[in-house]
Length: 558
Figure (cartoon, rainbow, N blue to C red):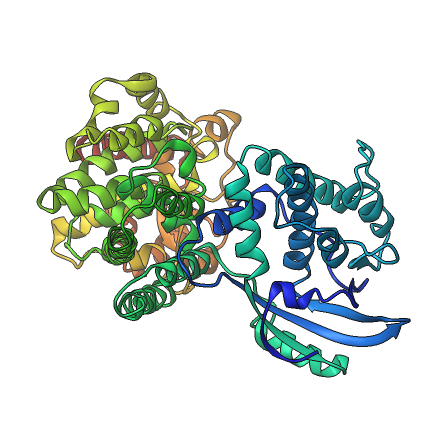
């Protein structure tokens, strides 16, 4: 077989049997893949040939008059093409289309002796009986058999809704489509080419799929420069996006979702399928025969919006606007649901972003304190869709006391076993915020978000009980353990290395460590004059400190 670009109809010359080796993955395409396949055929326009991609073959042997060709790469696509051809040939035959002759079925499917496609696994007889013939079944021995059957049914249902002109057009587009062929007679050569073609086997991400799709769609348009300038723009934009992904360690799938919610006129069902959303949107423009330049503009404007989303996402994470409360949003830890709102405010009303961050901190702190499951995103996202969302709307859940938040917050602040029942991160945030409150009062540099999330044991913060759970010289009674041991007043922030060094020392010994510590809230404890061997005095200290921290929360965090 000659390497290079060939037409699909020339690939099926009547004397080749394409074999899917048993070491290959079984058939895996689902409705979503089949939909994209059909969209490409339906929306192809003009004189440009449809490009089907690359196929890698290993020419093995001969069987009588037939050459046996192992499909090393492209088996999913080739299997789908043959299933599709089987269905469309049958339907066009029923219409008595001039495109179909007796030779057509023999060329693409079965020539009275052999099928064009064979599977070297248990699905082969199923392929012959239930895919290439009209036998129906509801019994499947393997999941891949069901997927093969579902593909046939999908094509039948979809194609039966189209008129003969559209079917003939699709048939012509496919049979005249270009394919790049790599054919080798040594499997070792095929393995090397396979590695190069598939980038070490790594599948395309959704973002890569969007880039590839949009570049392909630009190439389908009839533009003065053949789309070279537009493709150049897409390539440069994605180069910038990929740099940000690498630098900021961005989860690109999540950011695609945030972008679709914030800046695309999308529906709820589109949020989790942003790649499908943009593909459907562009394909509909082709279906409606929208002017080529307008389609180009729509594609490039989408790319501009997408690139902007990656930029502002990075700027928000790095607190480019230097908002005092922006970092707190991340420390509280409920940020994912609110990225679309943050990005929307950042773009639409940047002058109010800092106010928005401050209000967001109040809401997310309360929600985290009471372990609220909902973040209100259903309403917030709906307001974005309706173009009604404003920066001040984040205050509504608190103003209107959604989920009875106020009473639940008050109940939580009365917990005596605070450490056991409240999220450890929200306790850490309270103590961290109190530490910065003391530092600000005494003129010391404030701790940063980087300090909060540090993984260095010398700097990493944890929660320390002022009285250890096991102490020497003091025996705590049942009432102490129930009402004081895990009280907020008995908790202080500490670095992991310092905490580990102090271990389970008794309170008196720990106090010498607190004196050495560069942590204001620990030094503050040393200023209190109590007898650390007197349980009643310790209880009184914890009660007083608990009230002080609750007051701090009420005045600074709620």
